[in-house]
Image (cartoon, rainbow over all chains, first blue to last red; front, side, top):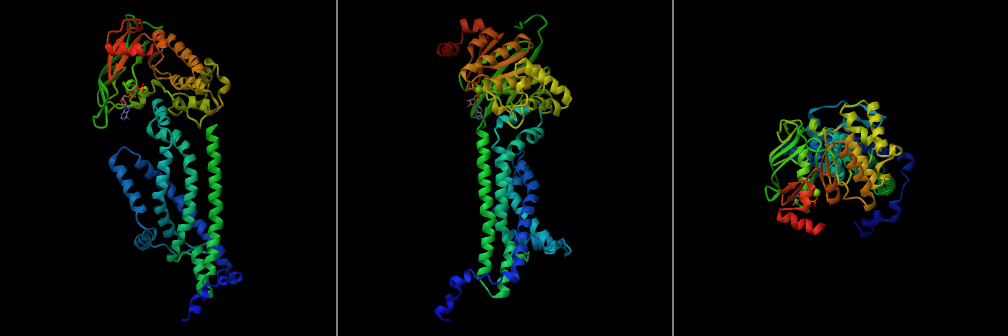
Length: 243
Length: 252
Ligand SMILES: Nc1ncnc2c1ncn2[C@@H]1O[C@H](COP(=O)(O)OP(=O)(O)OP(=O)(O)O)[C@@H](O)[C@H]1O
Ligand SMILES: [Mg+2]
């Protein structure tokens, strides 16, 4: 191979050679839909176990506390890809899900294991979001509620959580953004999300860079405005607090 | 002001109460004994860090005793088998920093516990709350959120929130310390009213004037123990404990 051959692909034109679009545009449209559905559902599923984990982590009972602590440590200290493979092949190797397409492009045989794996991973992060949100509520609120005779659960659900939500929601939205990026890893399991679309187009058309550039642009155009919007909402809420 | 007479009833009796923190490194309360009779106003004074808050907060078990007992109306609250929630309903507590629920309106702050604990129907609770708000001259604030109230208004509403539960005793932890000076009066006036109506009160305070005028008994604490207790006149005019003398010399 000559030097010029080596760098042939690097010519600027190859980065923006979007000639595949008319024919393969649907890969990207369905891919981005798949990615968004996957990310939102994964985080939505994560919310309930995450709340449970957070409350367990804040419990006085040592056993309860360390079970939750172990879960969080495990999922935060191992790569998502490893977790994905163990859950996909391990757990869902035993529980077979029949192949069935929803919206015409989401095969539940792959989607369900993938979304469960992402959700289990996300639960560990969302649990910490909940915990921080709960701890940010002044302890005096709990004391006031308890001194009125409300039990621990009532104080949490009627007084603390409604106030913690304000701290939690922006962080939860950020978690969805993280998930939009991280879920690209699901390509390796053949889930037909955005990154899978880009790779498939690259493989089919032999246009090797531009499909990934397009994927990057799409990811950016979703995540950047979304994170800016979250920041703006957070600022507004903080201003509201000071009044 | 309620005075002791022959029919006085013991309401709270603290026995040998000790509270330590950090595995015994900090002794916040050291063998405290205190009796509170129905209709009495007991004022707790003492230097910062002497254990006043810890003692007060032990009375409704916001602090769990390390040892000793707190007999409330015949029941030892320190006993783990006791359902503390049932007893806390009967003891109102008012905090230095008000601790109103910021996500609830004034009315909702007052009605939340009575309704959720099924002590009153929503209609009854609403009616009680409005009566109490009228009593403190703030019925027009019913639908405001706490953030829009002055400190004095917040504290008076916090007091009323506790009163809505029909408590048998009210516990106050420096209720005026976080207030601007011009708002102290309105809160003390309300507390004075309560005392006049015969409410049993335990008040941790730096307001010596209030203690002298309203309290039936003043308790002086230092280093986690009760050093002296007496009627206000005797305690302020003829202190015996050397630390109390020092304390009074500093603040009066
Ligand atoms: N959660 C805690 N952990 C460790 N030490 C504590 C804790 N709470 C209180 N203490 C200590 O216990 C002692 C008594 O505290 P307490 O708050 O009862 O004092 P106080 O008389 O109310 O003081 P102040 O007038 O400043 O409110 C202090 O030495 C304090 O540092
Ligand atoms: Mg104190």
